[in-house]
Length: 164
Image 1 (cartoon, helix red, strand yellow):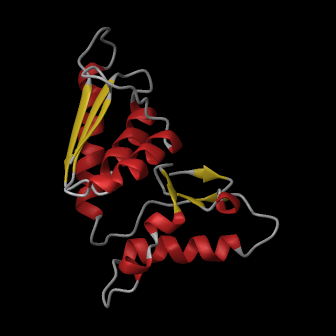
Image 2: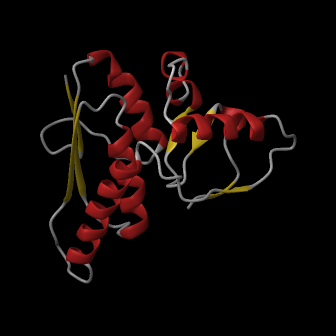
Image 3: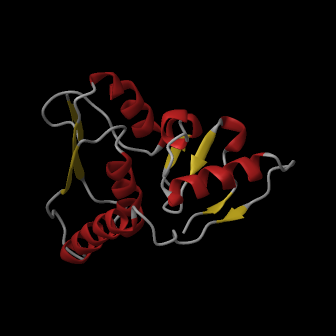
């Protein structure tokens, strides 16, 4: 899990995989105001608030997430990256890692997969396809790509595509 200086002064959160996300996007009012908000997200947002209140900002060491509503999504993403890493280990010119996220929102699972891929196979080529009905999420996705080191170009050979 991620360890280092949190980016609280920039309004950014870092999750256990090292995925960077704007706090206002992750801890938005519509989500946090639900009667039964998800435990994992509430926990991360509360930790952010506590760390942000400490000056100077301390270094942190995150832990694996608690078993909660998103546990199986994390397990599936990490299994996919791990299987890819084992398949291409020691091979040159292997296939791309491809990840498709339907109902992507801001691409949480895509960028989680990317951070895992950087740890498991940092030189791997990749192709990410995200689909959502909300076209206005494109700017959030482009920001998330930049924050998490995903290459973005235009055209059919681009490593990242967003369809709405």
